[in-house]
Image 1: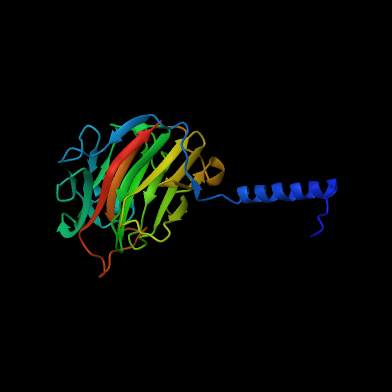
Image 2: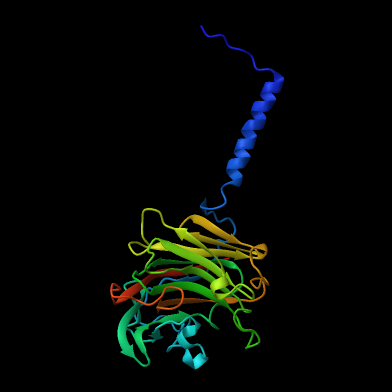
Length: 283
């Protein structure tokens, strides 16, 4: 029989101290890839299910059209190559899905067409849970996005002072990675505060995933499906925090080319389609 030695009080204290130290260390190290839980943001205030075939609901969505030149934004300010249209060829609701399709074709002054819709002036909100279930396209130079812009206060604010929240951006040449970013004064464009999420052992173009944020006073949490992968607070940005001031509206688009992704190449297949199952907002 083995001899069992009793543990004295000092040893017991040390063992307890070591145990709780290891527990605290493991908790503090869990800074990313936390499971997403929602406790308060459960009241549904917008449910766009895309259940009626045809054009997107005009009571909710408007279109941005052209190549941006009419707004003084050649290439929509990002050196994009497409012209946006409202043609059913480029954007349609069909079989319970919003479909935005990019084509390689000569149209107006562009070599590509696609679509971009927005809720400006129709649905705007400050704070809440904003999410969309999407299946993304793929290929070099393909750039889908689900994002938000702050209200411009009747022209009193301009970008980036009005603020931009990129809920999901994606380079088609990197089909396992999405990014979440914020843009504001002092941290915009290539200097935005951004973090990526890598979908291990899968691709975003092979199935649907939920992309969302939970946004409240002094924070924006980013998630993919049930994984919380980024939390942005005022101390993270190199400038003014502009996300507690105004209502924001939603945008969904599929760009071709641009500074973020580069131009399509000979291996890029067209057409490419962004599928959106739903857009929902909670408070």
